[in-house]
Image 1: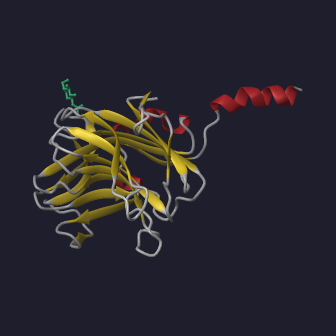
Image 2: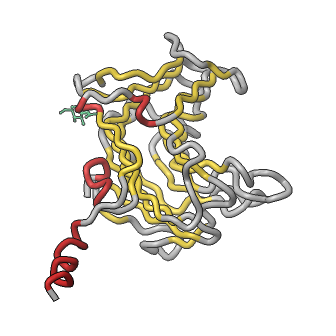
Amino acid sequence: MKLFLQALVIVPTALGALLVDFNAARGDDPSVLGLRNLEAARDDKRSDNAADLYIKAEKDANGTAAAHFHRDKGNIRAEYHALNKKTQADKTYWIGYDFAVPKIQKSLMIWQFKEFVANNANDNGANIPLALEFIDSKHLQFQYQASGTDKRVGQWQKNIIPNRRYKIGIAINTGAPGWVELYVDGKQQGLGEGAVKRLTANTFPGRADPKFGAYRGEEIEMDTFVYDVQIGESKADVARAAGF
Ligand SMILES: *[C@@H]1O[C@H](CO)[C@@H](O)[C@H](O)[C@H]1NC(C)=O
């Protein structure tokens, strides 16, 4: 009986495993996020930071510590690829992502859950099962792509104010189907036509991993600032970065 009571006390506060933990205010280097992906023109990949394309620990315009993702006009990618080859099927990953974007551009993708294995004609897996993409100069959309022959379809959107921090929370159950939930500044958002809390979705055609930063929208010089990223196995794991 005593053991049973102890278990009841411990369970509600139990944390899963914190898999990624980046906090700029603490002085973390952005490299703790994973693999740095820099691409100037398409397929012109860069291994090192340069003045026209980089991701560095810097300060935003307010003097706040952040990972600064910078691209000169024409450069298409400054992203960190987290959990490379580490994501697994039939698991639930919680992601907290605290960012600001000074200048918004249509087609800028600031987050993707990108497929790496089944995104081919034979397997017909979506190339980007889940994404956060600006659809114009104001609105950030949460998108879901069901298969390789389906388009990315908006499930939610929000008017984003430039130069303001937002804390995004995303829960992904990896499966076909699995499911996804979205939170903004700690508040759960409705997804899809029914504005459901939990959207059933093919989130994991083969192996999909999360990527953070700036992809596409290369028509203008682009900067994004990332203050905090946590990826864990429970909601409590990512409370700081997601604003729970
Ligand atoms: C910078 O400071 C201004 C004024 O306090 C505030 O409105 C804005 O949200 C801040 N920007 C960021 C990215 O924190």
